[in-house]
Image (tube, rainbow, N blue to C red; front, side, top):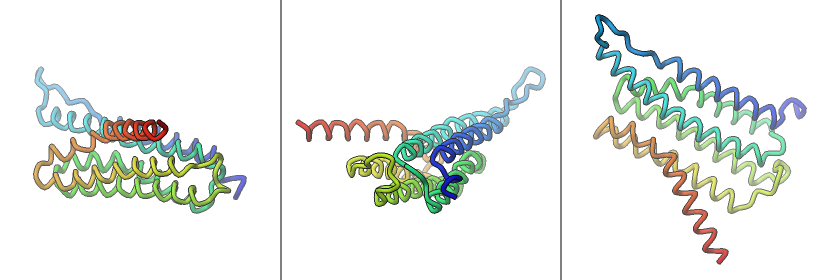
Length: 204
């Protein structure tokens, strides 16, 4: 098992999962048909919903992929529990495009809630991985400082927070609820800038 479960192989597997998820996203994007020079309005509406679902899902999956790559940079070698958590994480990543399409197709709070729970679980699994790594020095490829761990926990906490708010907004306005998670990337960038400024101020 130690020779089979290597960080490099898990990292390559992660890249493959990302490619499959992107393929699933693209597969759902079907252009509307044109009959007698007129575009079917219902199909056009579905096309824009699927296009938005592709963009939003790609953004979310990319964020999780970046966090997982960062985790691999600190991981010397995986244990069985880390591998199992990562496999579960990858499975949920593959489900993300499907739940996003379902959310936009049914346009109700239940669809928003299912997608939100999925991303909350994803965030929690990554938090668990960082917690395990932080408490096992022998698993670290390089020293994992408390400051880095804190930064990752803060960033990973932003994602479920946005989806919890999104679920609450779905009871008021579905359109606002599905747009809200898109601010995830700007929120993470802002958090990184605040962290950098705080770090700079402390050094001074």
